[in-house]
Structures are given as structure tokens and as C-alpha cells.
Image 1 (tube, one colour):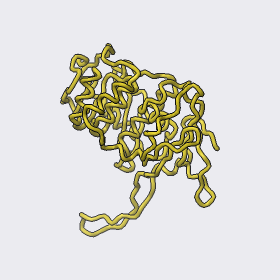
Image 2: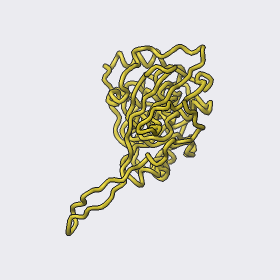
Image 3: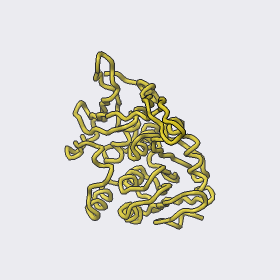
Image 4: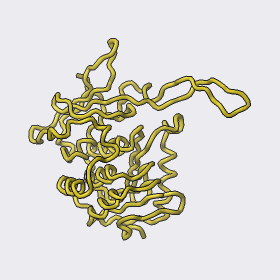
Length: 283
């Protein structure tokens, strides 16, 4: 097994790929190369046992794996994870960097066998309302309702531009979601990109776990797409009091935010926004 230091991407060239494309719409059809975001499977193992498979953009894989375990209630602090390593899965003699194995501290219970599923099947929540809320309420480690965070609408409205300016791979491909963690004064703490919204958030949460920053009290999480139940759940599990999205929330996301005492903002575009829960934090 191969251990890589924080920030190492493995094969960094796999973030993007070049393909030929036929461009229509001009005076004449033009064939040219186009830059695309890479999508590959990542198998996450715990103690050598396969847990989940997610389709992701390679990069920050260890943060992704750690964040997934936080979201599922398996770990909550850096000491719960003893190590994360790439397994030597190979194709044509070369490491694919598509399999990670996580060693938990001996005192941390192993993940529930019910988590053994294909992670990409959870991107549109298949759970039902009350059962979903009850499950997250039971698993959440930190209360967020008492978080004293306040943020001005002016600062909040500036965050999408800051997030967009930090998206280097999006500039090349136009095909990635982003998640950014901000302070109440609008400072960007970390940004992660991925082909999946849930993966981008897990990469942010995993970064915070590995740096010993959980719970993320006083922080704002901004996502580039819509606010689903799943993303609201991940924010609550990380102790984040405010989730903002540039697009719409789902009804269950609003219900969960209200249940948790979170602030949920949608359609954050320019100076306009809709506050669906926790309006007291905007002042």
C-alpha cells in the first residue's frame, strides 16, 4: 500500500482530459480538441473491507474519504483516523489511484454494514421524509441551533464571486461543482471542486477533519448548485450553521435545516437571495 502526503493528487494529469469535438453553430463545422473534466470511480475501504464506490474527479481523494465518514457518523475528529492509503490497484502495470483504504483508531466502531452500497446512488436522496430527519437527528454529534454566527447580506452576496474566482479546473472545463467554506467576514478558508456536489462538500469536510477543525462553528458553506437534503445533512454533521446555494433547495432540505436550527439560503445571485430557514443570522 502507498501512503501519500496531504495535498498529493496521485496522477495530477487525470483532473482533465482532451477529446475531439465537432463544433457547430458557426459558418462551417469545426473539429477541434476540447478539455473535459475526468470522472473515475473511487473505492473506499475501511480496514481492508470495501465500503462504498463513488464517481468522482480525482484529486483530494483522502479528504473525500474522510469527509464521507464524517457525513455517515463514523468519525468526528482527526484522531479517529490513523491513516489513509492508496491501495496498489493496477491497470497495465500502473497504479490507478482509484482505491483508498482507511485505518480507524481501535476505539472507533467499524462502519455499519448497511453503509456498504454504491455511493453514487445516494446523490438524489431515496429516503422518506420523517425517517430521514430522525436518522440525521440521531447521528448528528454537534448542535448548530445555538451557533451565534451572524453575517451581513452584503458579505453573503459576495461569496459566489469569490468561489467562482477560485475554481481553476472549472475555468478549463465548465463541468465541475464547487463547495467553499467561508468565515463570517467573507474569507475563503478552503475550496474543493468535483463532478459531484456531494463529493465537493465531503472534500471540504474531510479537509476540516484532518486539520482538527471540527465542528465548523461560525462558518458558512457555499455550494455552486442546488441545496439537497444530502448536502444539508453533511453540513449539519460537520457542525456548520449556515448553508448557502446559488440554486434552489429541496423541500426536505428546508425541513432538515429548520429541524437542526441551521440557516439555509437559496438562489444566492447578485444581491438577491431567498432565506428558507434561520433568517435571524442575517443582519
